[in-house]
Image 1 (cartoon, rainbow, N blue to C red):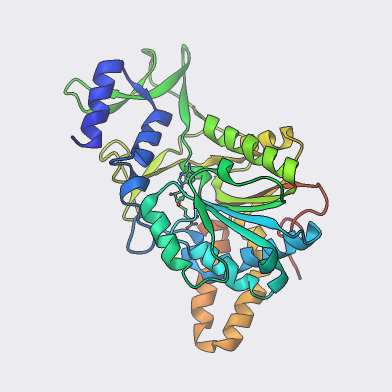
Image 2 (cartoon, rainbow, N blue to C red):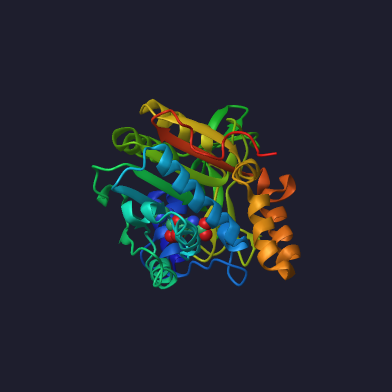
Length: 350
Ligand SMILES: C[S@@+](CC[C@H](N)C(=O)[O-])C[C@H]1O[C@@H](n2cnc3c(N)ncnc32)[C@H](O)[C@@H]1O
């Protein structure tokens, strides 16, 4: 039985399901979920992420981690954690850049938090010759306390489940996944209502993530860098989407066959972390990378390999231009102590 058939049978027996439950099943069903069976990153896959656009992204985050560690007083040991490490490219670039700071590598206890078996295997291959050997775990809670934490997560929060509510003339109702008259999956509302208006997305999982990370960082000190596409102000809008082979597809058409995402609600995530006593900062990906000196990094790489100049400029454009990833993607940091603020959130160097 396909996942689509199983979900239809479940809805027929128990009634329509929330978008959050649908996302959870499509992404993480142990037998047929997207991340359990066929995650495909990169040009030849379903979607591309910033580390796969350019090695500069991960290298700058490596330098960010080193500077953040120095700002914390160069603790030894400390835990470097990546959540949702994809195909391992980001951590591989981070560790290559961190070779410039052998004392950072010597103090580092490296952890990878991954729920997808196929991606974990790719990460192991990508890091086979890296400067450090990570420990893998599917749960953040498995990582021992007792040391400061520097955590990185790129495009992780956008796959945490959300519920959607629609404003109607008779009040807010929940958008659900139900069945039509012929038994096919369809969107439905929790109560009969005339055509819907604004859509509000609420993610208990994103809020719980902010609370959990905030609690860890406040207890152990450190910083968590979260990069994702999402909003910096509270707002309305239906951002639920499915991507397959770089095209937006109907999220109900092939459960488990496509990546499902939503825009991250950064205000909610960061409010939750502040409620735990942490400080936070938020900016755009474009600002963050420029403040870390992406232009200088590109110039240095181009000097060593002049034939790459044009390609490097194209990569920078894709990562920082406001009409590409630069504005839609945000960089957020959750940190404790409040001073110093980790790099990337202040002025862009002249
Ligand atoms: C869109 S990919 C991003 C990959 C990588 N960070 C990059 O930038 O290329 C999402 C990653 O998060 C992982 N993931 C999804 N849900 C997760 C969860 N609840 N806990 C930990 N990892 C999760 C996926 O398996 C995958 O590695």
